[in-house]
Each structure stands twice: as structure tokens, then as C-alpha cells.
Image 1 (cartoon, helix red, strand yellow):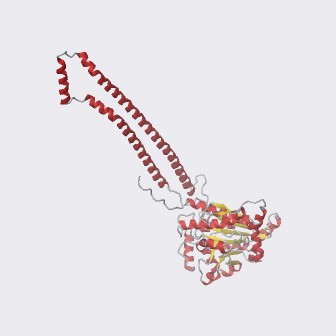
Image 2: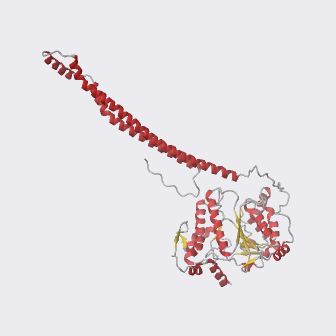
Image 3: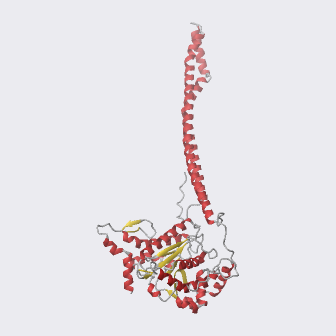
Length: 514
């Protein structure tokens, strides 16, 4: 055998069907080679065992040499004077060699039969292994093909049992999220009075509903679904610790507002369907909570209806397209928010409307590349062009990382652990780490896939260590899914609850800040 090939570098996605087919062919060729080698070895052993008997038989049947013939004639002449040879004497002289020849021939036949039998056994065993392996590979191949077929059907929009009842979109008409609502504040207040069992505050804090989601179809890269799972687990952990409700959406409520814009109809629908919720908190699926202790200072926003991570100088002085970020923001459930959504959505319908709006946004916002309209650029344009109408109720938050750009954070986690502690929420211990430009679920992104996935793994484990600490565990490393014990169990476990419970720490942190 030749030298073993070098181990391939770790890749974030599973082997493709073509790679698995190549492995199957190589395996089949290897097994075929083993079969031929086994057969050749068996035949070689048989040939060795038959060589000597065959040579003996050749010697018995070979013609006499001249020397032998001379000796034989001399022997006959010396004995001819005594008596004449008879036929019985010749028969007795040749009976023994002929019997030995027959016996050896019979032995050769037995050895040949035995070799043939062994050869059949070798072939049967080897072919049987090959057939079993082929059956297993065939089953695996069928499973792969069936999985790919199902995924292809899921990714397709065709469903014969569900007729398309979507009304055709008119690009010349102004897009609307739904019927115009003018008196939502009054209707909501009446509903809250009539339903006191559904208060809009919990434990003295306004009721918050965290909304997140991902596309309804499977990810292009299978490992993307794995990190979506880690992302939602991270959000569930934070919401559980801080008494926040959570909704994970997998549906496009309006086919015209797909992609970046899918959040708008969902936010509006949740506002109208959950009047007991005071704030809707949108968070992208590629954003992770990385400070599990920090709590939003909600009393700070009593006079505002929209909280965004952003910088006033970038917004008003530079008119930058990254002045604010819509990957994590809060909307108050009120009439003002419904009006803003109605003003925001008309740039979102896919097709010519979104493309033309993208040209307007690129022309008016500094640094924006030329591509179709996105929700963030559209909101910035709206706040700039209608500043008097909207900005009085918008709070641009930059005292902590409601949105923290991942590239400058994930490599500093060890330094943060050494120098600081959770509960700060800012650059010392970021509240949210947002993987802008990674697109783990898509087939393309602005950064290498390996870098994005390893950074997401670090962010998830960095946050998960804060959760596991209460239970006495932590990850072996920020890139390792494995955990290790950091303290032994005790007969007085409540001491550790008082010491490590995040809920207690968040309350204490809030009291210190106030």
C-alpha cells in the first residue's frame, strides 16, 4: 500500500453525495483487490502441493535413457542363459510402479478437489462481505437520496394540495401591512382594564416579548441549522432567567416582505394579538446574548417608543448607512409604533419596488453599497427625512451593546474573563454579540465560513458558561462543546444558589446602578 493521505482540514459541512460515492467506489475496489489476493494465495498453495506428485508421475512415465537401457540389456543377456523370461515375470516387475502411479494420481485428484473447495470458501466469504457492505452502502445512499429529495421538496414552493390564493401585488399601489388602525391606544387600554389577569407589567417591570426567527426552509449549509439551534437555546436561556416571553417565527406572514423585511408584519401582528405586552423586542437569529446577567434599563425608556443601538453623529452629521442597527431593537406596543410600521413598510415589497428604493437609499446614505432596499437603511432614511415626526420618541442607545459587532469582540473573551465580570453589558463584557455578515444559514457571506462558525461557537460557549456555573460546570474551552465539573456537590446546595444564581446577580446589579 502507498502512504496514507493527509487528514483533510475540518470543514463546517457534511460530505456531499459525490464524495460519499467516491468513498464507496474506493472501498469496492479495495475489497475486489483483497478477493483476488486471497484467490491467488490459495491457487499458489495448491500448485506447490501438486508440484512434487506431478514431477514423480512424469519421472515414472518418462522414456529410459541410453545408459539405463544398456544396463537393462546387459542384465537380460546375463540371465538369458539360465531361463527365458515369461509374461508373468514381466507383469510382476511392472505391477508395483503402475499401482503407485494410480495411487499418486488419485491423491492429486483429492488435493485438486480440496484446493477447489478452499477456493470456493474464500470466494464465498469475500463475496459475502462485499455483498453485505454493498447492501449497507446502498441503504445509506438511498437514505441520502431520500433526504435530499425531501429537502428539495421543502425548499420548493410547489404544493398541489394548497392552491395559491395570494393576491397579485400591484407595484404601482402603496404597500400596506394591513387595515389602517387609528385608535389602538384607547382600544388597548380598554382591553387591559377588562382583563386584569393579563397585566402589562410583571414583577414591577414592563412585560417584554422577545421575537426572533429564521427562514421557513432548511439552511443551504446543513451546519447552519445547528447554529440556529444554539442561537435559540441561548435566547431561551436569557429569557428564562429574566422573565421575558419569547416567540420564534418560521413563517413568512407576507410573501412580499421576505428576507430582511419579514420582521415588520410579524411585529405588527404580535402587537395586535398580545395587547398585554408592553414592548416587542426584535433580535436577529445570528445575534447571541453574551452577558447573561445584564438587564435592560427599561425605566430609562419611559418617554420613548423605539430603542435602537446607534450614534447621533453618524446618523445626522454623516448620514451613514450603519448609524443605527436593526438587528436588536425594542418597539413599544402603541399607536405611534403602528404608524411608524405603516410608514416603514412601503419600501419593502420584493421586485421593482425594493430595487428602486435601494437606488434611492444608496444615493442618500453614506457608504451604502448598491443593492436592493433593506429594512435598516430604510429606517435610517425615514428618520433623516422625517426627523420632526419620529425622532422625539426614538432613543439611540450606545451606553451598552444592544448590538455588538462580533469581529472586535470574540477574540477578546479570554481577556474579558480575566479582567471583568458579567453584568456590565458594554465593551468590557458585551450584552449582545451580533454576527453581521456571516449568514450561517445561507450559501454565501461576507466572511469565511470557518471563521464565522468558530466565532459563533466561542460566543455561545462564552454565554453558556455563565448559565452552567450555577450547576457546577463549564466548557473545557470556548471552542469545545464538552463540559467539565468546576466544583463538587455538597449537602448544602442552597449556598451555591445564593452565590451563583444569575437572577440574584441581575437584581443586585440593578440596585447598584440605581
